[in-house]
Length: 192
Image (cartoon, rainbow, N blue to C red; front, side, top):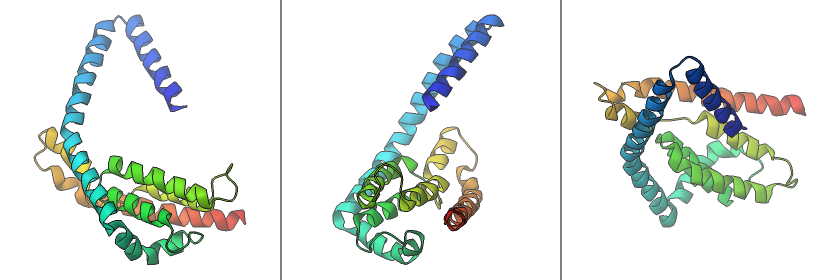
């Protein structure tokens, strides 16, 4: 659906450029955006590689299981139908940790693994389970302590103080996560 929407926007933009006689601007913007995208990727890629490597080491060393055990007192209230030592909790914890470090791209593989593990616990494979929906809500709200990617982008564009947004991001993501969990829980109480 998103692909169709983006294609629609591109087609409308190009047609508008042709109709208004600004096709040169459209061509220039295509080239400029491609160049900027490559620059952003080149600057963020090393940060992502570093954190993915650290997360992989944490997984192999058993640190993620320890993080999972630390987060379990909180997660057991959020994910009541996941057994204590199930691998899904480790993946969920890893996803949350990566999101807290502001590296959503590193969180994605853990999120996919968490969903696969949650699907194994799901009795009805055709419908997302309560835990799967709760995880999506929690992942989407994405509580962030250190917005690594945003700081990198702000630094790349020569911001005077790239980290000035940290407190605002912490407050915004904490609020969004808090309300996401409350709305998720209220939704399930209303649906009963």
